[in-house]
Amino acid sequence: MLYRSIIRPLLFRMDAEHTHHFVSILLKVAFILPGLSWCFRHVFTVKHPALEREVFGLKFPNPVGVAAGFDKNATLFNELSGLGFGFVEIGTVTPKAQAGNPKPRLFRLPADQGLINRMGFNNLGLPQAIHRLKKRNTHALIGGNLGKNTLTPNIKAVEDYANLFEGLFDWVDYFVVNVSCPNISDLRELQDQDALLEILMRLQEINLRKASPKPILLKISPDLNKQQLDEVIEIVKETKIAGVVAINTSISRNTLTTSAGRIQSIGKGGLSGKPLKKKALELVQYLSEHSNKAFSIVGVGGIFNAEDALAMLDAGADLVQVYSGFIYEGPFLAKRINKAILRRYTK
Image 1 (cartoon, one colour):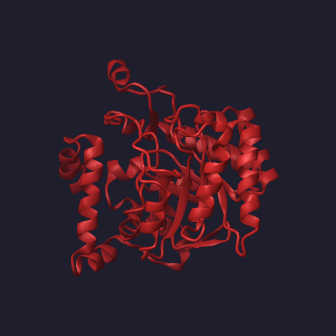
Image 2 (spheres, helix red, strand yellow):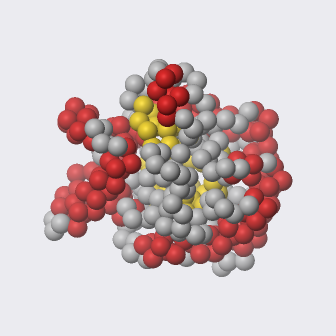
Image 3 (cartoon, rainbow, N blue to C red):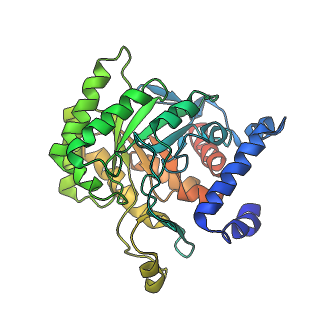
């Protein structure tokens, strides 16, 4: 395959974060050039009624999306939809712009087909996200991934989430509350049941005052134990949010084949990619079975091909998202997954 044999090796010669910015520019240019946008959409997009999914009250053109972190500043959602994705989750967005953690902060693990990042919610802030979302020109659905500013103490975190919810409400189709990222100091303390209930109940209070409330989901950590997963199920039921995004990045370094020296030199950060595939499937299946499918699940983690995506759907996910797989497998990933789903449902 051209991407894996030629393009990816060239891209991987650059620093990972520089590569991301370079590819983002190429995508923007490609979709601006006359005629090329139509060609991209024609080549990459699979459209069929059998691909459409109605999940938490929204109609998705297909069940394959881009996970949060790829389009942090809401600059690429139009272009990503042109590559065949049915939905794009922007962010993580914080109320105020912030630079994130010092560079380098994004690292590839080619031997494991994984990534480690400690980006730290670097983004241009809520006003800039709204400005770009006003230029929306896509049938793909847009999710807003919400996070608190690093300098906001946890006792005031609920205000950050509430302000983001109000600000983005008119511009996104659904929301994801992110309290599970390992790259923000003390953020994961908000996974505590009481703290989480306060945030979600506040957002639902605002949501239910709206003429047309929108779905709210919770993004969870892969490092939760079964007792904590049971608490997640209870929280979702108690707050009546729409569902869960499973999973975020992990602090675990188990099962990696990359040398211990290399892992130590990288340091802290959240692990994503193929090493999380098994864990993601297990958590999705656990949540689906132990909740008796009481809420919707978006499955993300280690999806690199059509078989991975189908396994995630079989485990109980209603939708799937990719990130690392998109980087390692290239721009045809959404098309290959959607074609496989189509073959399954049109036999």
